[in-house]
Image (cartoon, rainbow, N blue to C red; front, top):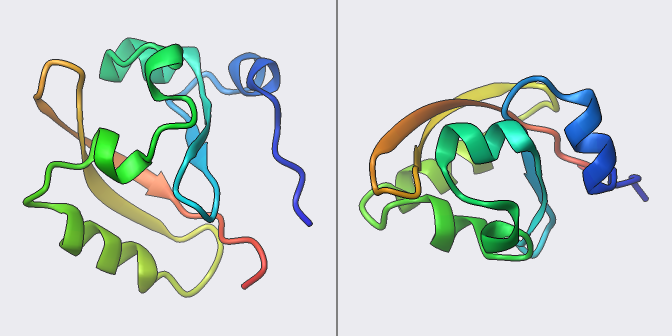
Amino acid sequence: MPVVPDQKTVDRTWAQLSFSFGNAGRITSWNKRAEEVLGHPNQDVLHADWVEKLLAPAWRSEVLEALANVQHPGEEVSIPILTADGRCCCVRFVVRKFGK
């Protein structure tokens, strides 16, 4: 079973925007850079459903299909993420699929 880093580890080790979610789609980590860039405070997103919180309804099926088509850990997919004020921010998403 993979080890999921705690929030302090994520904040300390990533200078770039970083968040993760588990198999149930709940956000499990959200670093300070994600707060700064996307405008969502940690307490507003941690344990939230990432699709509901960060993807506009019009993009959801396309983004989820792109992520499902990832074949190897480390592949990158650019996806549009909603900022707290409703703007779109394109994020390069590095996919880490455990157990595949």
